[in-house]
Image 1 (cartoon, helix red, strand yellow):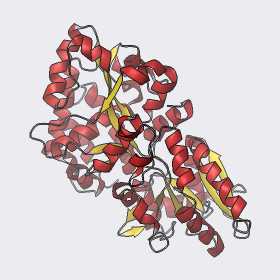
Image 2: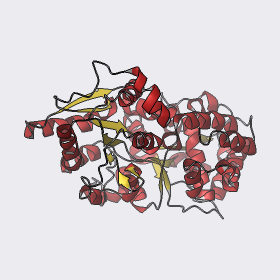
Image 3: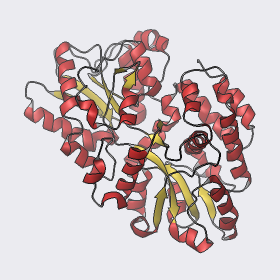
Length: 439
């Protein structure tokens, strides 16, 4: 992946944008007041805020729109991830948000909806809805109404493997958890790290948590957490999944120095393509790193697959987790004309043929149906395989640190770090996380 995308993905997990309580949105944030650089100007064009990592796709779409809509102009601005989080939180709370608001949906979108800060797009997007994958579209739906439209590629988390390393160690790509555990001693005997893990960045540990909880307990386990069900973290499937994580740590699956490896520098990916590690659980965004930093490896030595099945588990082995998409909402505080421009852009200027092709050209998967037929290299390519995983997944679960409010997400990463370091037990992890529900 590109350096911009790498920073965006890792910082995106570290903290949520405006994953604040509704009371904070409508009171504390409103107290910040508006600024001269706010996105709202009732007499001006529609405005759009997005991340710098989106410029290569969004900016051409805005340019094309403005060229053919002289009376319906859109003024777009792009911000670094962390700067955007602060700026948009203040602007939304003060009623000075841009017309088109970028977010990752989840808890952030729900807070916006509860605070009446975003417009109901259900009627305006009814015809556009059919072209998107249901699992992606539905994250923009709150209480049966559409408040956000996908605008980013989808990034499932995959298990990457170094095929040459596995072959030399006599190990097959694991299809089950038992296969995965059995591979560890063989790889260690070959003096290879079984799994690269950027524990120093914390968020890569979450991908193991998400997949194991899904495979053992099913996606409903996290749904209960997201819904604020009391004691939801004490689900026996979650405790079993976390016990499995610590068993893998004890077995030496991640080595003894994983807490010193960081994702911002792509150090975990480097361990894989240099042959020092056999496997890596990372998002689809990591493929760009392999292409740019180890092109020969990406072309012939790299393999990728879905996370292994867990025997006796409740989750479907075809389920996936990851970054489902980024989303655009329309500010409820925009003028009537600005809202019309914004909704027209969302229904005709986003994910048209040119928009989707720009993503495909960059090795990214547009979250639209039947995209596989348009992918260069078809189903045998990386993009084709990622698209198939998305198309076939009964559940595509959004990264938990995006789906949860910021206070819960921060506690989750902190306690996961303790779980992987074995300074707390699975039961203590659940007890600590149960205390965050409702906060």
